[in-house]
Image (spheres, rainbow, N blue to C red):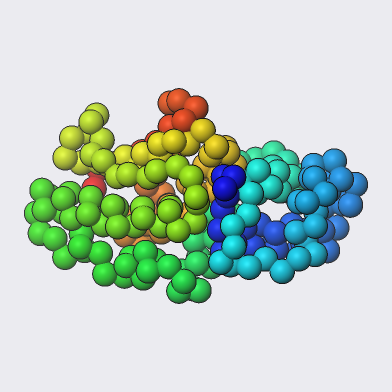
Length: 204
């Protein structure tokens, strides 16, 4: 199967594009310049949450939204990622979002215990990636530059991982942690074409 994303997430980006088109924020001409016929056909199809959709189609639609509606700003994509997190939390489809309400770190006592518990929480939560993407491997590991205080979320086999997805994932991950951290905790970078790292910006 080609690199793909689950309909639970793909539906959101198609809905966002359809809304912008209806509001006149995106024109038919822009659809023609940015998207393939198959991409445009998705606007008129029922997106099934259980189906897989090409990540390249997801990339092109997000690039159109960012550059036309978001005026080229990646912060626009981060906000869309936050919106995706809120919708998935409300939908109750994925157990990983329910787990946010009963994390181990919330009950841990002492810095060492909290750090270990947070690592276990992250490892459970990052299993969400395999439910949404059929490519890449996500793991949570201690940050070697900040021993005992921070973690990385490392994405390997990420050669098919588009930049727009990294920005949206950044927003989604930070939104998932809002209740715990009270603000953004993570930022991503790409040290290699096939590797992405989400880094904590401060200690626990």
